[in-house]
Length: 280
Image (cartoon, rainbow, N blue to C red):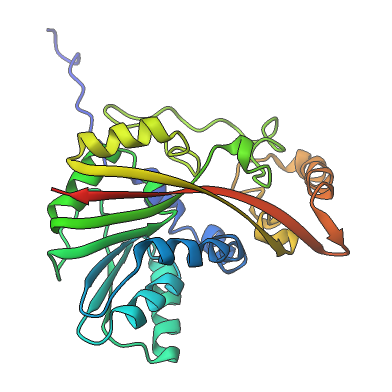
């Protein structure tokens, strides 16, 4: 080929998600959004059933609320390594862990799609809404499996489809938010609902080397302020143009009315799956 016809592409794992979860505008809103994820924690921990002495890997540990629950359950003798790509959320987790004087927790800023984690092999790998943000999920789950002991359990919560989670603002603002760029070579789209299809997720886990794969659907509700699902301060981050900010606010007001219980309080229906699989 003639000069200038060659092009080299460098595909960086999870580049867009790492950028998003390290943007202070996005992470500043996280403590409010935790109201939704915290409503799921008891169901997830019930499925995990952590026991004293276990070594646990938590993928996408965020602000550390589940991390601390896991650490308390595996004491004495056990340990938890919480991994996340977000410096700000790990700092929040570290503050909470220090205030709670919770032992046997290690936090690491790593991307589980590619990274090796000290402290394994792990008896259990856990994630609460973290694994949907892998842009190469089969590669990521293979990496997780390699760091588990044979027979170890992978347990994670993932949202069901957006149709089952009408609280999500994506559809309400779809005419104003620009579409994300297409995935790069060998990558796929990321997002909260990418593991809502049970058959597809089961096939993905099997391809990554997991066996005895099962899922269970859950539904619950959470009473929370509007800030649990939307923060107008993020409209700029979402790409809404300045001249349409007022329109976006009106659209969100209409969207939220369907969930209103009273002034400033809303009841949001949550639908999620908890997946279980065994490392071989």
